[in-house]
Structures are given as structure tokens and as C-alpha cells.
Image 1 (cartoon, rainbow, N blue to C red):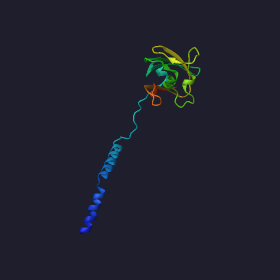
Image 2: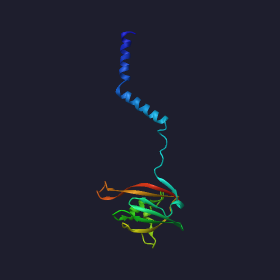
Image 3: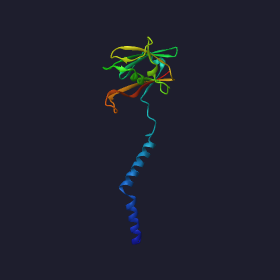
Image 4: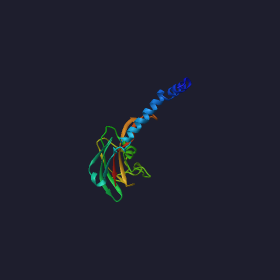
Length: 168
């Protein structure tokens, strides 16, 4: 090999085997190995799924309340909500806990107590029977997180996280 050919080979070697290029090749190899061994397979769902008939009368813990589905009649879902926390829970929060995903209207706007009056506040330790118009094929029961609002600094219930999905 001539001297100029050696210089060209050294220059190419120096340009190809840089730290960045080696890291890029290593990352691509890692992703490839993960793909081969099922690393991209669908994860198991964390949300429990149930048929309506199987959970009637069974309490579902959904912080800050415990929700018990009592059944349906005349297009209305009957649930019992028990505030298990230490602070009152407003009806807007309850509407985020018990919802029909994809429904046009929030359950907050349409839920009433057994006596026909709107649900306003759930006090700690007091069970309340609630009627909600069935507005979809599935019901979601969500847990909430008590945290500080990024907007105004107040402490409120935020971040609905699905606990159970019930097929109606």
C-alpha cells in the first residue's frame, strides 16, 4: 500500500470510528435485540376490566372514594359513593371519578341523589346513593391524586387514573 493510500485509510478510520458513531451503532443494536426478543410486545393492561353483573354490590376503591355499583334500572346507573378520605369531595371531582369514556356530557352534570336533588358534596364517612344516566357501553372508575394546582397553588384532586373499566 502506498503512503497516500495509508493516509486516506487512516482518515476514513478516524472519521468512521468516532465516539458518537459508536454510541449510535450501540443504541441501534440494543433496540434491535429488544425487538428480536419481544421487547416491543404490547404491555399487559393495568386497568382491571369487569362485566357489570360481576361487580354489583362489590366496592371498588378509587381514591378518595369507594364506589359500589348497585345496578341499572330504566337507563339509570345506581351507585353508592363513600368518601373514604378526611376532606369533603366536590361533585366535580366525583364526576371525574365515575365517568363514561367518550360520552358527550360529563357525569358531573347529570348525577343526582336518590331523592332527585343534585349531588353537591360527599362528606367523609357518609355513603350517598347516586343515579347517573347510562351514557355509553363502558363505565370508567378512576382514582384521583391530591396535589397542589400548578395554576393557582390551591390543593385539589387532580389526575384521574383508571382503576376499573366496567362493560355495561
